[in-house]
Image (cartoon, rainbow, N blue to C red):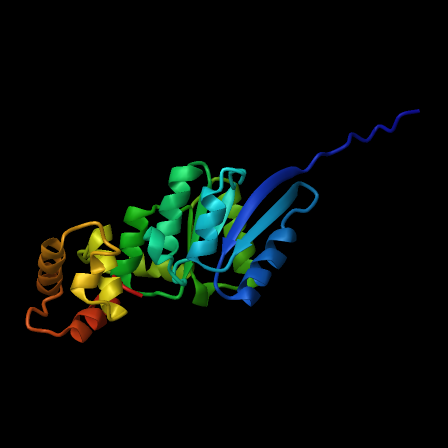
Length: 231
């Protein structure tokens, strides 16, 4: 006699975790694998920096991910212009448009948080100081159910008085990054596909934008970090 109990098949989800701290990756994996194990099965892929993540995402053999956890601040991949988890999120949107993005950061500057939401519009945004095991499970539950999740600190910042976010484009971000690394303007043309004159003009504009027209490169880098434009 056949059993009256129907066989319940689990839903398989492919997860990508990108973080440069192995113990954090293990914490995410531990939480994810405990989420509703009777209903869900998770296949987890991990990467430690922008370069390894780029290789995974752009590999034609990689099946699309369902959810990606991306740390915002990570070792960059200069050669491909991938400088952060934000850039990886944009890459995922190009290669795997149905992948849900959860961004995690230590950054707590209002203007930066608002810019991330406006430019990336992630499914989840979590300040790492808010993160506990239960919080991670709650965030994961929201996102897997197609709901948005912002952690408590994000919500508090968004509820603060409105401020105009300073926005810069990808070339400006690359210029700031290379200035912070001590790259000369002339050498930047090896990495940024615009002319030396354009780079020089953009640097002047960045100083005007950050109100340090007479400041040094050190002043520019410091102010860019203060405004959340550079990590």
